[in-house]
Image 1 (cartoon, helix red, strand yellow):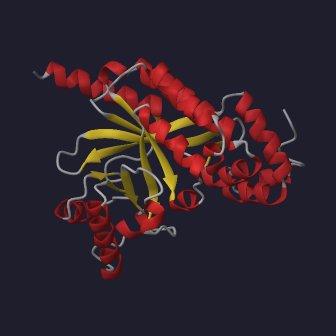
Image 2 (tube, rainbow, N blue to C red):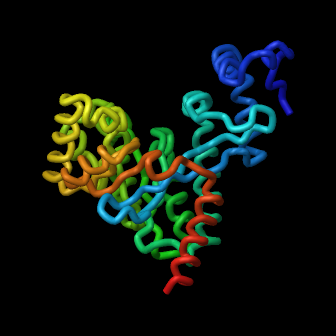
Length: 288
């Protein structure tokens, strides 16, 4: 294994300080460590459920990449994703995430709900890479379950960078059965013109606005404006960062379709989520 640490001094720091030290001073070492982690399959899928606003039933999950480092343990994505995007390593990392997610879903496909959406974040590096269509196709082939719908999550910034070739790519991807969402909507710089660049299915309202519901009238106005925009564009809405019942009632009252946040569940390893889903399915059958 490459020299992840230059000397023993960093071991004396708290974990979060160590990670910031490593990012600030050792980008080349981090690249080498990311390459090693790819070879060792250390990037693992975590899942956070998305629930229906009315029934609270699970309708899908967002897959979140986590790094299970042999020394540092679980490393937060904000401490390695920016470097991975800059170096281009985000592509093989996400390819592994696609494959591992599909493999685990296949194992539990019998307990998945109908139209079970699986959201995966896509970097701009991906849609500049012709392999994205092939990866989506391989995902469906491996899962081999017509109940599963792949939801590709993009940021507003990424939509701004769309070209004619990108538009063709995503049109082809949608023909596979994939859906498209803009993640963290409201935190970027989209306009109506930019939203029309792609055939969208979902807007995910950024949690910065959701957390201020009931406390900040401006935030509520922005949420309501987003809801009205989604209605006009015939888009489904997912509210991110839901943490209390007051937010749930507000969002239900304003016809938000789906909710995601710590109120329902924190991200857990995908394998753990699927095991819980299987237990719930078994208990439900046993009670009938």
